[in-house]
Image 1 (cartoon, rainbow over the protein chains, first blue to last red):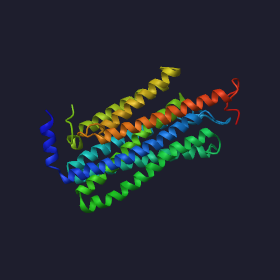
Image 2: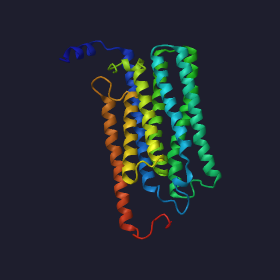
Image 3: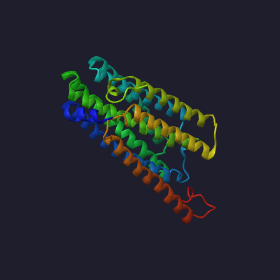
Image 4: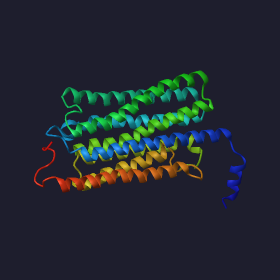
Length: 202
Length: 114
């Protein structure tokens, strides 16, 4: 039943589609390794998060509405960049640039809130040296923040070829990788929001 | 609902589905915690289950996991990663809780110990 489909697929290889799906696959393999990095950090967090060394615990430090707003910004940004990805595949250049720019600005807002929380904790004297809990908190959330920095830099770098050459096949591949990276960070953030903030404050 | 294969690249539908599901599940988890609707292990398991459901939905609707045509290499490598992830996470939790149980005095929490 499925045989005719297979034959068509094998006898008419589309070089562009092949390159596109190979690029997406290669980038997906990278994201898989990054998932494992975060899995290891989550395992470390689970082991160490009770060791507050007489200092503050998650319940004393975090204010959930702040983190909810942060999460909603990240969700909205992932949605907007998803629309941007679809528009890029439809070859609407200005729409693509506008949607990616909105996702970028929401990303800046998210990053600002992430840094704001680090700054608040440090100003209160709760830095990563105070307890194992704070060490692992700064490592886990800081690793996410570091990924966000690279993603934001990637947005800026990608604007140049898209403005210069438009939505060529190569640029659509690049935009797709950035979209996947950004949405991957959104998925990781959902787990940070749940494990660190919701279950920390519960 | 959604056409299979490459239609996913140009379609807005999966993006909108992912967004709506993500929003609802996040707000649900938030209100369960803030309004104290559940306690203890029920709370922990429900909130983590909501996060896992949301994660899977986002992977499918945003990152197009499992909608590729056959041989599904993206899905296979993902499932292998899940296996390793489960070993890392459950293995760490299991072995470290056993260590706590075997090494620490029962009456003192190790938070005060240093």
